[in-house]
Image 1 (cartoon, one colour):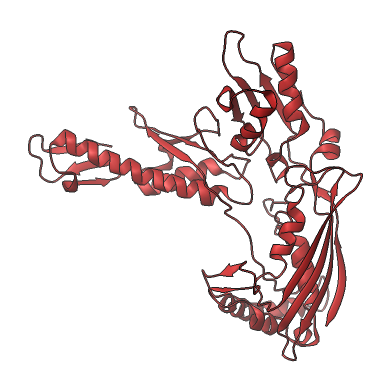
Image 2: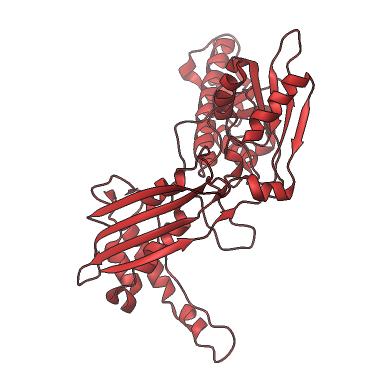
Length: 415
């Protein structure tokens, strides 16, 4: 049995650009209140804000713009998101607010100030028998949108990919006099190998792996970890149902990683007589990504041959526009340069969820692929009508729908 206490320090995202918002009041003769800013979840915020302002959801428009990174900070609803529009409606004129860097560091969500008290039991072969944990999360002076997420995710992800027959965890979200907490993440920068992702993941992984230093693990950590990783399709933390390892055997992955780590070229890194010493480490974990419940992507074929793409997911800098253009290009057999992917706007996409939890490519990308399939189906239907042939005789490839036998007008039609 091992007992240990770990603390993970407070941080904030400090994106390249600070937060900002422009509020344009509706025309006195009628219209919509327009908010232009950097939030990652425009549809969620619209649903929250409209009742606060006493207006229908359809009378509030939110538009996302280019910003220098999100990292969780922009996925929240802040007091300024309410005060700036109220000022605009009160004055009857547009109001712009841009926070300073000092304001950003003091008021934008902090994260990760969590303490883990863990007990972990093992059998003689180094297999985990059970984990008992208490998590204390400092959530700051008051509860913001995602204040309870750090402790919640910490409990859900603490067992990681290991088989844990017995697991218990108590969560405490503690109110203090600090800046409110949320879920800022630390993304990997170009050329930097460290990638500390999202709330609770780094702290939980550090605590779990350090507690795993039992005597059998010390003698052969990779072998011990491979024995205790969850089997394919089996829950890692019983009786809990999360997380399930079904795509690839984590045991096989662990074995392959161990083999590579023990290669002679790797071992030689530690045999240099002088200079910095280097070693190979092995860490395994479960990443909770692609969160639902849904996402929207719309594709419109224009008369000039270009395709207009709108999505409910926001682009915070990682290149969502390029990714969607590539996915659609592959599905439709067209170059990615033919697609114009616009930033999220409630005026063009009626429903959406937004960008957080590494969900943009998974959810918006799959929605884009489905939209491409529907566009092909519509192109085949219209081509069949134009060429006066059954739809089953129409084929599609690389932007062209054509029929081998046309009753009236042999040939093909552009999609």
